[in-house]
Image (cartoon, rainbow, N blue to C red; front, top):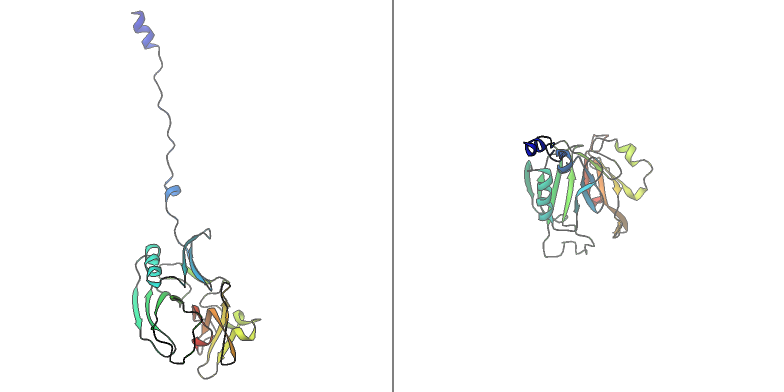
Length: 218
């Protein structure tokens, strides 16, 4: 009986407490915006952390595949034949944001000019947000729909171009740092990098492209 009393008086062992793991702590970061720079386009989260850096000098098809992983399936794809001024191009669109892969010919350009910079792909923006709701802007904060005159004010003359024949206006928003940002051609200095354009009859920016020559938007 004594031994039974002793057993009865022993308190039960309390199992160690386990703190529940927050699902938010393990959830992958979600992209919230896209930033266009002269050398990369970055997909970032709400804290500004870069989730995906698309470097224009790297493989274009791999850039599209990586973008699909983080942005989801694209809405459309499109093709453009090459010309005297542009290579053959294949675009993938998420609505307002396109990755356009350049398919360069092995032959020299018809002009005979040596191209100092041939990006594997470029990005084309026609809206302030993607179809999925991600905000899109250049690294200086410029978005489609902003006032062209406001963005172009105070810029150097060689960073702004007006096409009087078609009424289009272009302005350089960001220029490269790791390679020359100015290309001399026919006695003119042509900036390339992130370029914004305002179409004829519009006072606002209607398109942003990176990287591309300032002159080539006209």
